[in-house]
Amino acid sequence: MPIIKRQYLALVSPWVLAAAFSLLAIIISVFAINNYRRDKALMTDILLEKGVTLIRFVASSARSSIFSGLRGGRDIDDIWPRNVQRVLEHASEHPGVKILALVNSKGEILADSLPAAREVQVSKQTQDFLAALDDDTTDTRTFSFRISKDKNNSVFQVAAFFSPIGKRFLNQLRSVPPALNARGGMGNVMMKHHLSSPQWRQKIEVLNREKYVILVELDMKQFSERLQRQKLEIIILSIVLFLVGFGGWLSILTLQGLKGSQSRLRRVEAFRDILISSLPVGLIATDTRGGIILYNRYSQKLTGISEQEALGGDPNVFNAMPDIHAAFKTSGIPQKELYQKEIQLGNDSGVNHTVQLSRLAIIDSDDTFVGTLLMMQDLSQVKKLEKDLRRSERLAALGKMAAGVAHELRNPLSSIKGLALVLQSKFSGENHDRKTAAILVQEVERLNRSISELLDYARPQSLQKVDVDLQKLLDKGVSLLCIDAEAAGVHMVTDFPEVFPMIQADEDKLNQVFLNLFLNGIQAMESGGTLTVRTVKTDKSIKVIVSDTGSGIEPDNLGRVFDPYFTTKPEGTGLGMAMSAKIVEEHGGVITIESEVNKGTSVIVEILI
Image (cartoon, rainbow, N blue to C red; front, side, top):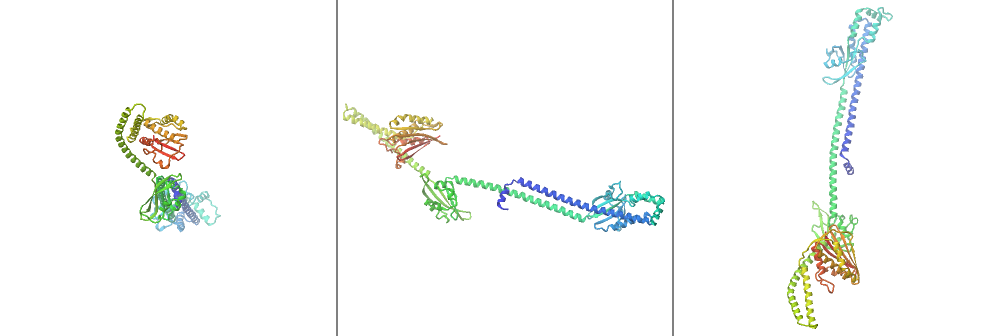
């Protein structure tokens, strides 16, 4: 059976197949039984017709012989038993006749077709059968039959009452007057002589009252063999049906098992496809001829080549990517050693990804090379994390050093400030020396403020977290700087599309961060512009995006914005963005910058909900 037909058959309910088979079995059984019954009825009719014909033949022949004897003047007692015996012997010559017998009401056999083997009495079963004949008739037109068993085979028995004289002849005798017309010749003269004898008429009356039976036994061997063949055929047909049903049942179980296996296999294949497609690793597999047979979704994301273009093709589709194409140069040769290389891939947005290529040979259980697998892992996040870790380590070391230096500088600065104040007090009026001493005090105080800021940056922050309404916090910061923005020709715009839930944060620290970002954006637009503050909610965080239309940040300086003491402002200390980044990180958030020269800068603060 073709595989497609098996698959369609596997979809059929086993109950439907079982019902169809049961219906077929019932139909075949009914036809077989009806055929057996029809053949049995036909054989019974044939045997009955044969038995009836023989009985009628015996009856008519015996009566003719008896009537002829009476015409010859013979005594009735001497005529009819012998005549019936001869007729029985003659009729038994027909094929299939086992025995013909004349039996009286007591079951005694008076004459039969086998005088040499004649038995005196019929069997008990046969006598019961004969006793069940209709007592109201003595005519051979009424028959009874049965099937009996003898020692060797089944026999078909047909029986009917027999009157030696017959009703017709008896009625004639009763209607003949004593003075019989002698126009019938010599026979009629003899009949006239007998009929005139009361004794002779009495013998006929007594003979007529006795109920004799003609019994025919026919051999059923031929018909029994045919019926046995019918039974054998029914048995064989039943066995075949059983075997077919059993085989069908096994087939159904097999098909159901196949269906279940196919269903499980499809689920495993679907899960495998989903798993491969969902892996954050690019997978490209080729067969022994170099054809691409596996190309997942992440590979499409990294290379920009669609699955339709890659599947079924060869590595030449990566001609524009020399490193990937080179990794497949020896893909047709088994390479059991792992091949690894870091490359740079750019996507459609112009963003470069650091990707690690890993190539290995696919070897089956027989140690046969069956293909090549190329894995592409995006290391951009790893590289960023490594960069952030190095930055954090550098800043931590710098903070510790700055804290130590600041601590050592504060004592001398206090002494210098004290001496400067003493020196200032010794000069009166507004002379040059007093002004010089005042400048010295001011510079010492400015240096002390810088040292305090440095210590604040290096010292771990203690956050006082409370429920904070972020939208109100941003509105407050915008309202505080709106006057400064108007003075600088900057238009401040807010875009808060939805109400956010309360967050757990240090309100003062976050206010410091956003004021610093707003102020930096205003200062970046020397010729005026627009400062936009908008919020975006994601599943797990709230993003606050502060965008300006200023001069932007040079690409070389973009990675140094959060470094302490890095600034492009003449009067800046370079700790504002560093402190903002530290505060956001202590809240479990992330701060990032996107900038284009002469187009503007966007600072994104992402705070977890």
